[in-house]
Amino acid sequence: MSHAHGSRVQEFIGDPVSEAPPVAREKLEEIFQDIQSDLRFDHELTGCLNCGICTATCPSAHYYDYSPREIVQLLWTENLEGIYDAMQEKIWACAQCYTCAARCPFGNSPGGLVMLMREVAIKHGMESARNVLRPFSRVMLKLISTGNQLSPDMISKDGFPDWGPNISKVDAPLATLRKAIPVPTLHTTKTAWEVNLKTSVELYTIWEETGVLESLKTIDANLYDVIGDIMDEKRDDWQDFLDDQEEEDD
Ligand code: SF4
Ligand code: SF4
Image (cartoon, rainbow, N blue to C red; front, side, top):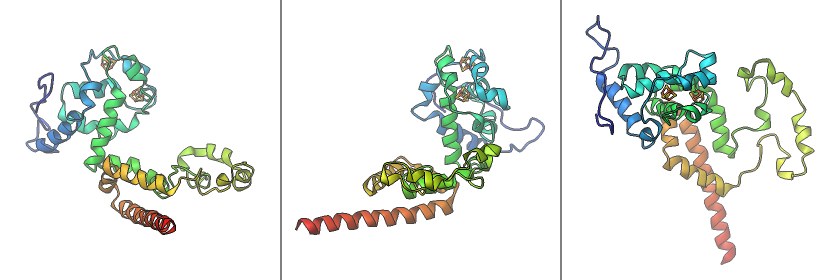
């Protein structure tokens, strides 16, 4: 396993009193390799003093069993099992606020490293990634079908149970309020704003080329299929529009 700073990779894998490791070394190495080979890795991790400044300033560390210092140490010492374990739960506690990156005397970005680990967890279809991302299916569907992440009609008690009692504070006649907005394209609660067809189709290309849709396939195959159908439909609509334009020009 290559690394600019030489290998510190963990030699022993598994429970010391058991012959069988819970996850094969090959799998652990593959996961670490995926994290380490990302172009951002050497930029986000240049060393670690184990000083704990990142954890002291981390809001998530105050509320969860989570420490950016621990994550960075696991990566820096190439602790394959520890990295894998952290990807089962801990990495999802990070709020991605990057306070840690602003404070680290070594110039590391623990939040950025967590982002890499999350992407690899998704790539490998880890259960933790499926569980965390499941509630976002509706958001993803909305984004693909309308270009909006969120629309007023999604803000309901059923739509956001994780908001707890705060959701009742958004109990307002949204349909009426939207009609009061001077811009006619905002007179709907189905979208936050109108995204034109060309932009939607261009976004599909970006999501395909950047591997976002391929990642979704690993996490939720059904949603991937539904989204594929919507994209095909919108691309057909766009092509029809272009054909009509061409006919008008002739
Ligand atoms: S990542 Fe930076 S702030 Fe955190 S323990 Fe290491 S050197 Fe200290
Ligand atoms: S980016 Fe994550 S790890 Fe860094 S301070 Fe914010 S919550 Fe903590």
